[in-house]
Image (cartoon, rainbow, N blue to C red; front, side, top):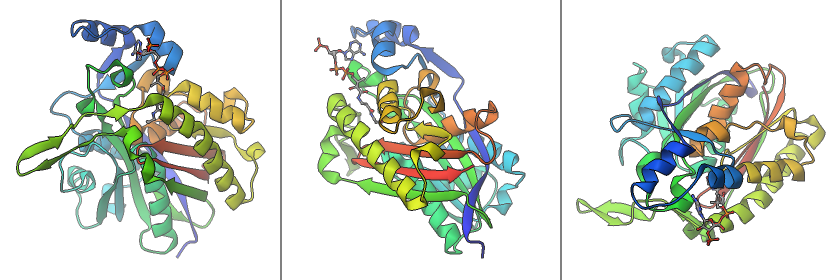
Amino acid sequence: MKPYSRITGTGSHLPARRVTNADLAAELAARGVETSDQWIVERTGIRARHFAAPEVSASDLGAHAARQALEAAGMRASDIDLIIVATSTPDMIFPSAACILQHKLGVGGCAAFDVQAVCSGFVYALTVADSMIRTGAATNALVVGAEVFSRILDFNDRGTCVLFGDGAGAVVLQASDTPGILASDLHADGKHVGILCVPGTVSGGRILGDPLLKMDGQAVFKLAVGVLEDAARAALAKAGKTEADIDWLIPHQANIRIMQGTARKLKLPMDKLVVTVDEHGNTSAASIPLALDVSVRSGKIKKGDTVMLEGVGGGFTWGAVLLDF
Ligand code: UT7
């Protein structure tokens, strides 16, 4: 049994339809909802997002990202013995998106399940996969973040519908003699359930409650900057590292102002901050692996770099993973 886990391949996928702020503003205007490119850019840093076609599911996006990650790792799907999908927009109530994705990859038999921690889902899933590898329960894991948030947006609520997009990112995490994942720090506080939620469910064949996203943006904003700093510092302390050891900071891509605030609190120069929110919007559990893959493929993140991943979202959930790439 090897003592560590390490990322050996990354992948990502965005649906073809790119919607700019101007496109979205025009669509919303037709509903009588007013917004502008200027407001969205100034308040969030978002310039565009991608929306999936109606027949495309989270597992479809995730399967594309997973195939890329497998190719980058030089592995076949049949080599994988654990699949974890982080999503809050699964294809069905059950089975999990992970089981559906497994079948789309043309394999069967390995453990597969979803993790639901909203925008912190990927750091939760990566931590679970790392723990399973280090205890010998798995050797080659596929960890995916995949979302179709466009399905749960209220396009009459300009305070939320301009923020989110669809997409997927994936990593192959393998047992390794050298680290890899250096430390994780995960948290949740259910008392904040109401500030970011989709307060609906199904019962007796009917939708109960409201199945569209609700958010108190300012409350989320204030909580996010503080907890992201705490989680990053806790992960650094567990790994015996300091801020100066971080080569790249990949926070959840929700709002450029939250991301810059976090980088400032960690005293990191802005050129160590990975930013994809401008082109992807907030893709919830997909945002971190998407940003990681984009940075790896562009040559920004190189083998051996120390990377801090940070998630925060509904629950309220938050956490950080520090790793050597
Ligand atoms: O993944 C989960 C994590 N989620 C987040 O990180 C979101 C955190 N929160 C935020 O990013 C920000 O709170 C928002 C971007 C959601 C909102 O920015 P804000 O600076 O907090 O704006 P606000 O909600 O205080 O609204 C300011 C004004 C309001 O108008 P009045 O009351 O001042 O007249 C809003 O009605 O902006 C108005 N507004 C808009 N105007 C044009 C809200 N949404 C829009 C819009 N276009 N899309």
